[in-house]
Image 1 (spheres, one colour):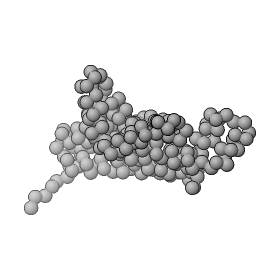
Image 2 (cartoon, rainbow, N blue to C red; image 1 turned 120 degrees about the vertical axis):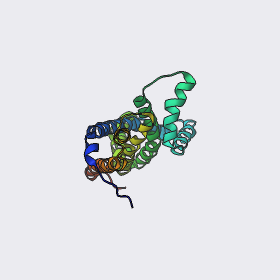
Image 3 (spheres, rainbow, N blue to C red; image 1 turned 180 degrees about the horizontal axis):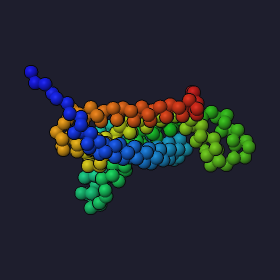
Image 4 (tube, one colour; image 1 turned 180 degrees about the vertical axis):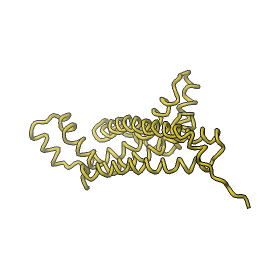
Amino acid sequence: MMHYHFNFAIVWRYSAKLFEGLLLSVELAAATIAIGMLIGLILALVQLDGPRWARPLIRFYVEFVRNVPLLLLVYLVFYGIPSAIDLQYEATTSFVATLAVYSGAYLVEVLRAGLEAVPKGLIEAGKSIGLTPFGVLWHIRLPTALRIALPSLSNTYVSLFKDTSIASAIAVPELAYGMRWIETQTFRTVEVYLLATPIYLVTSYAILLLLRLAERRYAISR
């Protein structure tokens, strides 16, 4: 029977690669959440208040993105589009755009549900004090909808952080890419993954904890 001899010291020499990758993973998640929220919010408002002809298009976008593997979308945007229309962009830019579009398909449904759950009485109260439609949206509908949707948004945000690992497929130097790089340098597969796994776990739980604290303070029970 073979006995595996662990050697974390050799892997730890390259630990800076992991923490640099972790920082980039967090930055990727933050950027895609911001852009995805904007996409989701605009489309949710169009679904509720926009023209009828736009609603089937939004539903198609949501169903298409949610039923296609994220990895396939990443390859399509990074390799397919530049080949088809001779357009060049960096891998990081490509991944942020892809994950933002991907997250937008999930966030549009979360935000639509939040907007629909805003009590009609609050909207009527805003109109009664002379707020314009935009004023009602900005001061009443959006803040209330975001507070209602906060629990669902929290789960989506944590999932998006974990989804950044797929960026390694197109050589974006985030955490998963750093793991693979160290593995090729040291050939210590088990140690690399044993070291990286708690990094993902701790970061995910830290994000979730911060969001749960925000929920306790701001969320509205439906």
